[in-house]
Length: 440
Image (cartoon, rainbow, N blue to C red; front, side, top):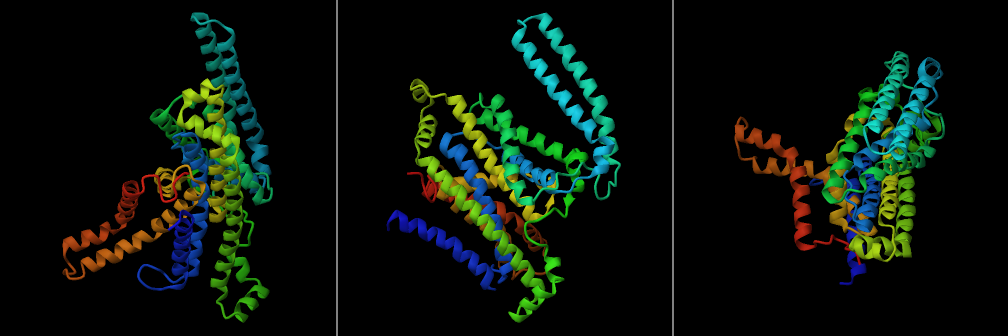
C-alpha cells in the first residue's frame, strides 16, 4: 500500500466515524447529526491548535506546554473586541485603569533602562529598588479604586469594561495578535531556556494568565463568566422564532428546534474548515520554503546552523510567536462557538496534554499528521466515555445490583477516557513511533 493511499484511508476513517455518529444509533454511536457536528467543530478547532503546536515542536523543536494560556488569550480577545462598550464602566474607572497600566509599563521600562545604563553595584540596586517600589505603590493607588468602581456597576450582568463592539469575526485575528504579543514578551525571556526548563516556564506563565482571567473581574468577569457573546451566525432561539425558517424546516419535514441547531453548527463547520485549510496551506508552503528548511536545520543541529550564520535565538522567537498566534486564533474560534468565556474551564489536561497527544499520534513535523491527530483524538476523547460505560455494564451485567464491586466499576467508567488516551499513545509510540503520518 502506498503512503498516499494509507494517509487518505486514515482521513477517510475519521470521516466515516463522524458520519456513523450522525447516522447510526448503535453501539457507542448516538445517531444524532447534532452530536456529530459538535464533534466535527471541536475536532476542527483542535486540528488548528495541533498545527500551531506542530509548527513550534515539529519545525523548531520548541517544547511549549503553555498552550492553555494562549488559547485563553484568544478567548479574551473575543470579549475585548466583540462585546458592546459599557460607557458607565469607562466613566467610572476605565481611564484610571489605562493610566495605571501605562504607569506600570513605564516603571518596567525605566527599570530596564537603569539596568542597561548604570554599572553593576549597590547604587544601581538602590535606584532600581526605589523606582520599582515607588512605581508599584503609585500603580496600585490608581488601579485599585478604578477596578472597584468598575466592578460595582451591575455586577450580576456586567462589572467589566466591555469591548469595542466590533464584528465578532474580527475577534479571531485579534485573538491571534493578542496571543502573538504575549508570546513575544514570553519568548524574549524564556527562549534562552531549553527542553524541560522551557516547558516549566511556559506552563507557569500559562497558569499566571489563567489566574489573571479568573480573578480580574473588571477584565473578563472572572469565574462569573461572560455569556451571550456575539456570534457570526444567529442564535438557535432566534431561528426558532423566525417564521420563514420554521416554515422552511417544516417543509423539509424537520423539527424547527433540531433544524436550527444543525443549521448553526453546520455553518460553523464550514467557517472552521475554511480557516483550517488556509492555515494548512500556509504551513505547507512555509515547510517547503527555504525558511522551513532552515528551521528544520536549526531543530536538528543548532550548533551547525549557528556556525552557518543563522540567528538561532531570533528564529526560535519567530516560530514561537507564529505557533502561539495560531493557538490564540483557535481559542477565539472556540469561545465564539461556545458563545461564552469561562476561564474556569481552561485546564492543562484539555488544552495542553490532549493537544500534545494529537501532535504525537498524528506525526510530529507533518502538518497533515497534526490535522489527522486533532480530528481522530478528539473523536475518541468524546466517545470513549460512553464506550467505557457500555463495556463496564457488559462486564458487570452478571453481578447483583447491590454489589459494591459493581457500583465501584460503574463509577470508574469515566476514567476509561484517560486510560484510552494513554493506551492509544503507547500503541502509536510502539508500532509507529514517528506518528500515523510521519515527517518525510
